[in-house]
Image 1: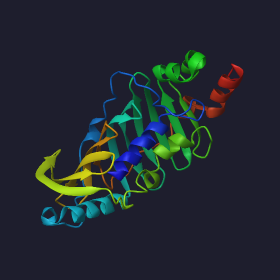
Image 2: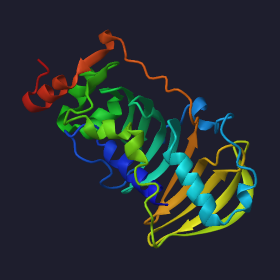
Image 3: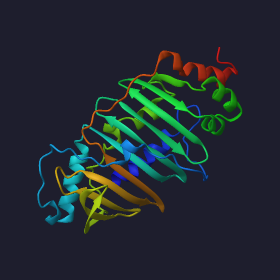
Image 4: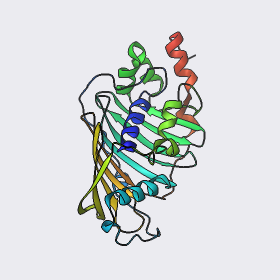
Length: 272
């Protein structure tokens, strides 16, 4: 599925977390994945969405088209993910909307995890100590101490934060979902449920990836789950909370340091 491939790549590069350390996912590692929150794991298509009776009786290509169209038109949703991107294990969840708000976290096996908040054009991130030690080399311990219990902040346009900001961009995440893929073939599978939601299974095969795509058969035909394999790397996403407002709030100023402090530490050995 084209969208899954693009999302996995975006997550991998967003995991670079500021341009100071380069794109993550170079080489393999092992470790525990971040567990998504309970609220992020449930599938909740909008109860007020127009009904789509009998969608499971339509041809596979038409079901797929409607599912991608519904996803592309979503004003907000939560993405819960787990899998490999460029040999880097990623997991976590993010709730995001079309107005630039998001909240969530990314976990990277063996490299820690990062909490993310974005409100309009402002971004806050809180990496853990393992992340700093893995990503900032000899300055990792100093960075971990400097930002202990604090968020790194700046604008989404800042060169050092724009990759992470793109992770919070719903328009960008699914921008190419409806772009035709001449090599992709879709067939229809079994009726089943995903977290209690009735779905029809679609099997997608293209030149370098395969995917099982689960489309809701009640209410609007949202895509609610995807299991994919791209270049031999498995990746799974649950898409939930369609239309639910994103509860993203700026942290307390006492818990925030500007990204310039990190730049100063890395470039000059001091945050002063």
